[in-house]
Image (cartoon, rainbow, N blue to C red; front, side):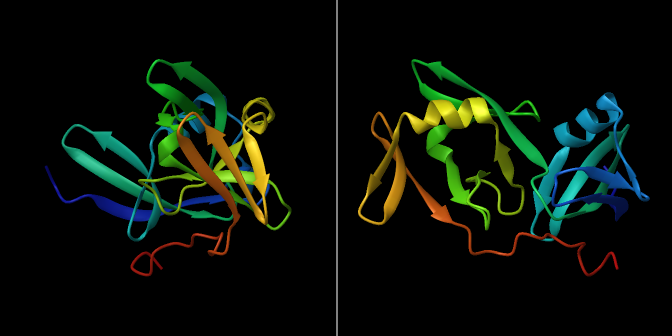
Length: 165
């Protein structure tokens, strides 16, 4: 395999979670799904991974919002799982919940640092039945799992890596 080609994809994910390319919103469902299903991160930022034969491309994106969404939840003998619109099922125990400056709940998968997931109304409604407010703390108590919901104090924007600029 060759060294991956790393470049600026020209894509910006805006604060309203719209994907923009060269000033135009990406509205083609199959294109957007491809990008979301192949969204990855590394220590430099967020990129879209594309494989062609033995070649690998990493097109970095600038992100100001939530690039992905939690679109559903699933209950099994193994616990509660959250489903992302990228096709990934994440165990509740591996998902961290935060509130943004508007008080809206979003999350970050334990294995990630930059990719944020907006949580849909259906999932929030279900999870709200397990929310507990104790003293100054709000958390989700599901079975033996407790997940704090805390204000997000990190930098919401993820810029292009320095080596791309």
